[in-house]
Length: 209
Image (cartoon, rainbow, N blue to C red; front, top):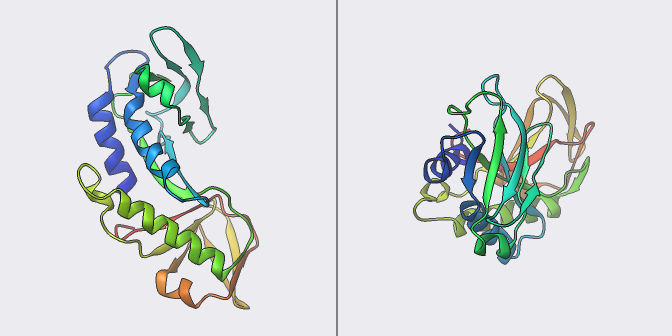
């Protein structure tokens, strides 16, 4: 099980009301967003999502307080674009998800990832992304974030599972499918890297993967 999903289950246990729609306390999301927004992490972000399966399909969502309701943006991959807003925390806002079915077997995944992806990187750029990811993970140490106490092994460059991608590192070509991983040691020695397709996600490579 991925570390992000382990933490997500803790959020669900603390904030879910068994009703239609499923309701989650905004405060839990706010605390995680605060860590990345208050720190110096210009290249990375925290993304929340509902892993999509036949039993876990999000039809829509909203953010509500006692007096107001706001739309919640949800992507085709079921990423939840939750805003960082102190007023919503003060007003004890709730995240409402309209699920297909009762949603009782679903979870909320949290992932640290690069804000943007591109087809070419200098080695120094990859080093900076790796350092920021490690720094944020270290800031999340302690209960209930004990799952994030370890440093990463490097970085994942994630692509569509069914697509083969040509990766070129310092002039050497590799053909990969699904994901390409760079170890921390390889990152420190990297001059440049390029891809024939833009990565969908750039995320930490953890010891559980």
